[in-house]
Length: 87
Ligand SMILES: [Zn+2]
View: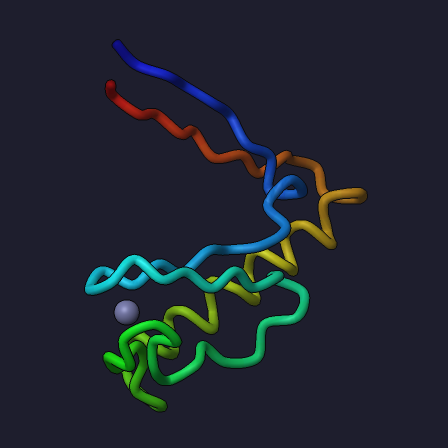
């Protein structure tokens, strides 16, 4: 059985970062994102390395989500995400 959702980029207000080691989570609004904290608040494992490719990609993703949502009112296309989960 599958569940399927279509999410408009304007509905994406924040992103949740979940630690794969302990399950602790941090939710950050795309509009307020500056940096991902360097270490997990739950188990202190390192989450990001400043200047790494992953850190740069994460920063670009958060900025893009915010910019696309901000531009949606005048954009000629809607940006949507297809989400599917299997149960
Ligand atoms: Zn953790």
